[in-house]
Amino acid sequence: MVVDRGFHETCTEGVFGAAATAGYLLGLDHEHQVAAFGIAGSHASGTQEFGHSGGEVKRLHAGLGASGGIRGAKLAARGFTGPRQILEGANGFFKAFVPDPKPEQV
Image 1 (tube, rainbow, N blue to C red):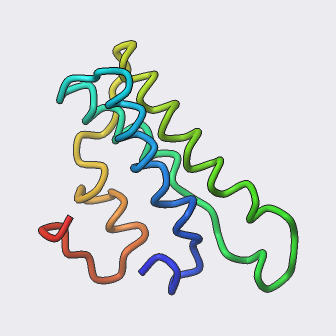
Image 2 (tube, rainbow, N blue to C red; image 1 turned 135 degrees about the horizontal axis):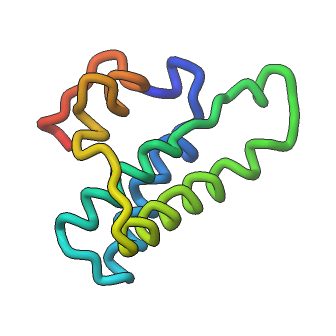
């Protein structure tokens, strides 16, 4: 899990939920939704260091995930593209954040 590697899942995974929702609300077709996921996935981040050394940043993580997803959908609606294999690609989300990915379960 991303949590075991020090990442805060609200921020890292939130971009995809937000992209899916924003894409639906914007009426994106399949190709534009794929682009939205690719763009949004490029925004995935957020560590859990706040739990060790403090800081108020945790409060921002849900907003960062949501804004990354919405931004991805809006850019895709305007024709921007993103990596088509943002999840399962050689340098995609799973490779970066998941120690034992099972893409077939997504």
